[in-house]
Length: 334
Image (cartoon, rainbow, N blue to C red):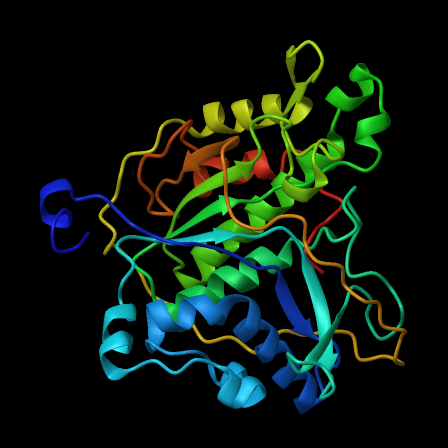
């Protein structure tokens, strides 16, 4: 693509990487910090390190898999490194903890519970999705500092509402749970931009419509628009109205050159509860992997230094700060 089409078309070619941020279960335990890095390496670095960083697999994968991990030649490493053209594309939904476990292939044992046995955040309808707004900020900062991409686009972010599938239409349309999710996550994304100079270019909410959710089929609804699967009638939910009002209150952003004002800051390691150990839970595999159709998109303005995107312009900067705080969110950052 770079040899034949890039100069002529000026388009982007990228890869969407799906990851839910993982904290060390015990912030005072060096082994748990290693476990968290192994989580980053196996779930994110497996693909991102060769493309954005080194042309090769991350250290934890090499240490854990040894001779079973394929070896790249020098020529292959050179081809891989920098092979993405355009922004880093990120899918993210939830958050979790992990602890060191040498018996595990990946070297860690993830859990949704802290050392006191409390859940990391409210559970959505899907058992793997716990609402942890800080997770999106942590991942944005990590990607910015580790891979230094020219820009970042959040290609999927959203949630399903507990028991939504069994609700009557009127109740399902009042999806306050989802509105609070989007408000809290967008606020954290805005903080990543303002505090660390993360070059966030756009945001896609998963999803515009209720749809076929991979291996879960039609059992869960992620849409901001309700779909009657029998009649194909569609009804905007409260979250759709919320997005519309947010966009209208912000106005249409003007593109700003990517190089304007980018930078980063150094932060202390993430903190996790350090109380008495709690029982660990096995984390089921996520039913969400990869991207697809059905997303509603937005592009950011001054603080996000964004460009246009597919469906609507959404400003995450000071212009919408008041809108994000229009009512108290139950999921404020701790």
